[in-house]
Length: 232
Image 1 (tube, rainbow, N blue to C red):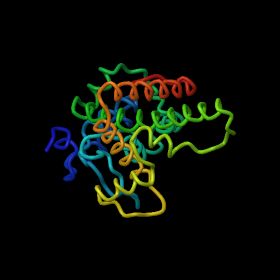
Image 2: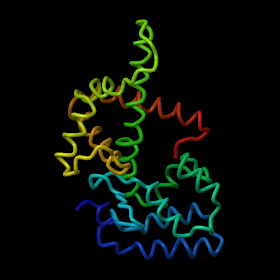
Image 3: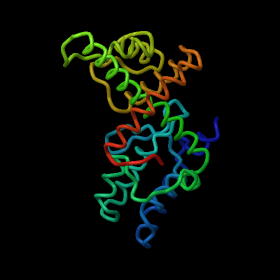
């Protein structure tokens, strides 16, 4: 068991303490975002069934979806924290306080921070990379005189992972034991994206991996500039 799995374990030893801390800190006037990050440090469940939904906070036992946990915790103190600031954090990725990376790391703990970085590069940046390659292909097709409005997703997946999205999704579901459905839930989609990230690391040499990751980061920063947010 990894160090982060010891902190985020299926036993749930720290979840009640985390909820208690957040409620108490919010009631005592501590800034809700600081209290939230401290509560994330205390949280222990890797996954849970909550209000009819299955929530997986630690993808593949190594990628920590901290915003999903933040949403879960904020629901527990609904009415005690500003709705607008919560919405900005959860749906726009804009925190109410401008913390440094070191401050953020110290508040959630170094092990969870490393797992957060796995999620950042393996899901957030990977999603941006796929979009960047789709846009790249679209521009290439436009330069060749082809019409706009086509879907270039399959071509992007072929370039990045060597197969079309349906074939890759079938491989992922078979390997990870997901049922084969017509639709893909958000949790499964994030796990699939992280799996794609790991596939890309194995498929290409280090120079190609670094180049593609840089492309994803550049697309992500472009998106953030539009939203007016900065990195943690």
